Length: 141
Image 1 (cartoon, rainbow, N blue to C red):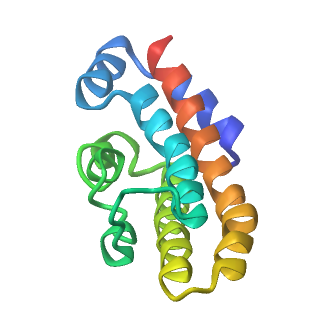
Image 2: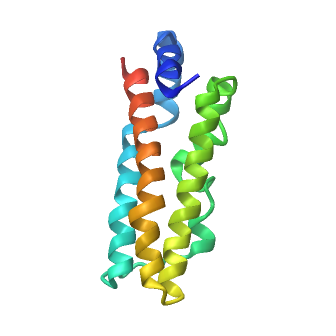
């Protein structure tokens, strides 16, 4: 089952389930937060960031608001859906790659960090944002 067929299943959620999910997490803010990471990483890569970024913290996919939800309350809603597990895996990969971008900068390997940011990070970030946007659309309908 692909993302679109999974979204079709989400559209059949009853209003009470959608309301419960909206009460647990603001998916539009989760989308914004994950989009904002690219800017944060680019500024860090360019040396224009005042942030102290720790790859050992960034790599934890269960610490951001979305990660806490994915590893917690979302399980009761979506455990049976393959698309949910794909989102979980993609979100974990997002954090892993973001951490490696920071690690590359800290190890003074900016070319490798930039290649990661423009390649693998851009790809996985796009997948996460699309999945979250679709999930948000289904929950808001």
